[in-house]
Picture 1 (cartoon, helix red, strand yellow):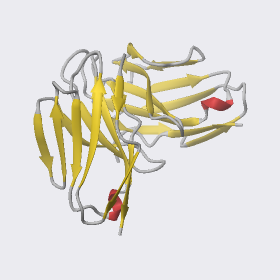
Picture 2 (tube, rainbow over the protein chains, first blue to last red; picture 1 turned 135 degrees about the horizontal axis):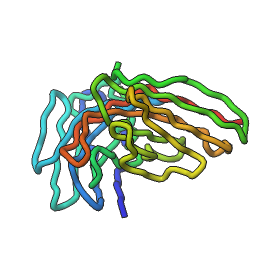
Picture 3 (cartoon, each protein chain N blue to C red; picture 1 turned 90 degrees about the vertical axis):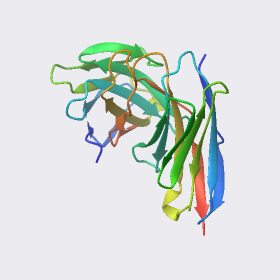
Length: 110
Length: 116
């Protein structure tokens, strides 16, 4: 089967750093994506990892360990606008199809 | 703006009815995906089309069907609607080829379907 797990919700303080973890078990693997979704809006792409290691993109970084079936999204210098749901998604064994986790609802407080 | 257009934005209909949701992918994208997002569930993959042909199927009910037309726009048809079909329906498109390296999917703004 296919399973993607991430925490349901997290709270962090403005200006701080937060790490959102994701573990996955899928029948195939063609990369892991992180998306940000504000309530009622479309998911927007944040990052893509297909090889082990860290990908950095401004305040956002994403890490992947394929042997452990594990990824995390690191958000630095948190801003209030970062309050959103963060979705971990795996591209499985069929071209382009993404399997999403339930999402982690991040609340950034002053 | 992702470049993916979905219409309508909102739809309210009664149980037992049939509706059609429409999606225009980004220019040049051959792959179109449909996802359902209910309040208590994450994004659930429904179906994928690539250049007019069905490529992958997820947890799509038999009451639901989709197609992709020669101009690459896609339609999702939902019939015999039930209260539980109320959800946000997203369309996404990407450059992803049949079995090649995956690229990011760009999502439309979604159609919010309410079945009453």
